[in-house]
Length: 143
Image (cartoon, rainbow, N blue to C red; front, side):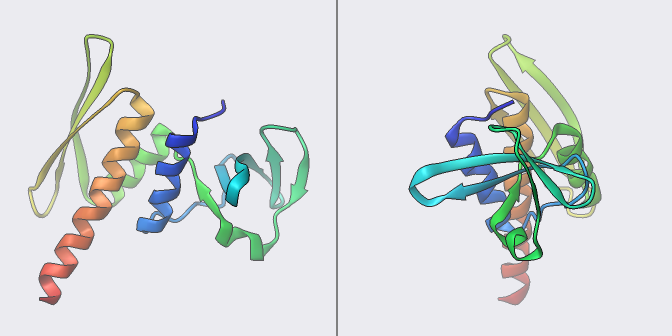
């Protein structure tokens, strides 16, 4: 499934915020190419990339990994939130137009509510807010 440019830009922001791709077979990866846009891949076994646009299979070299970012699946996003201390309290659809996700952090008890038009988008935004929360906590500790 091809993603729109804005969604891919937000996925790229995940990596910039500290969400590192998992280079495991089945991972949905992407790379931005300056003025050309983005290309999406599925990682196959043996460090091979399947281009979702062309069907071409190429070898993934170690030097290329730094240019790739992950398009997290819902299950990957939910697992990451859990591993980083966030419990998804609820997720509901509102009038079949948007999704609302509520989550609470185990240790800090902080609550975050996210609303987006798609279920993929709501999990993506939840990860971004969780990463910003970590940055805010770290800056307060270092102050």
